[in-house]
Image (cartoon, rainbow, N blue to C red; front, side, top):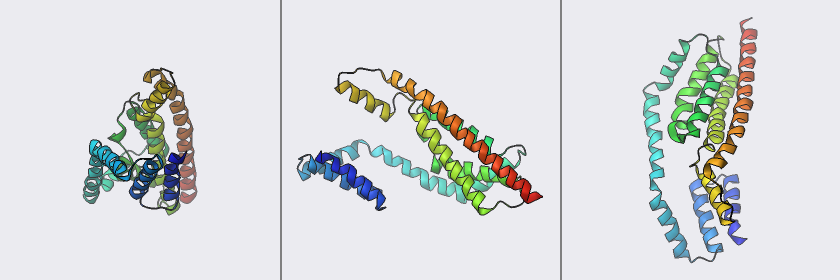
Length: 225
């Protein structure tokens, strides 16, 4: 049970808002030491894991690329694009993105979209532009609400879509855990059970997006009158 101290370190560290990387490293050290491993062996295990999986740092290259694209006017271009379609509103736009996010995540394309890649530079500005097309001035609380829903749409789509992909880490973890207890199950069977949950998530969050659209429409009509 002492090995679970690492979980407590993660919870307390995140609650105290310490540096996430520092929290994870300390949690790994605590778990290794609690398991009876020598300090040098714990460090060697951490180094080996990082060396074998260092390709994950490639994702950090997305940040400067997006920054350069935004400086070149990516958000403004996205707003201009959506402004050309007069009939597009916030709700249907985000529902389409939710469907796109779930379908691509379901086939393993998790990194094709995300908060940094699509939401901040494209989806949120497009949703704001769709709302601005129906009112003279978009209030700041409504603008923040649209951004929050855009971010939540990406999270919901990715979270409930990725479990359908049979090679995702969570599916493989469950297959491995069940195999240790003598329960052999195919990854495809587990991933199939995630489909009803993904459909329910789409319907629930899609309804919330349509309600958001109705709320923004009514507010815009009141402002216009």
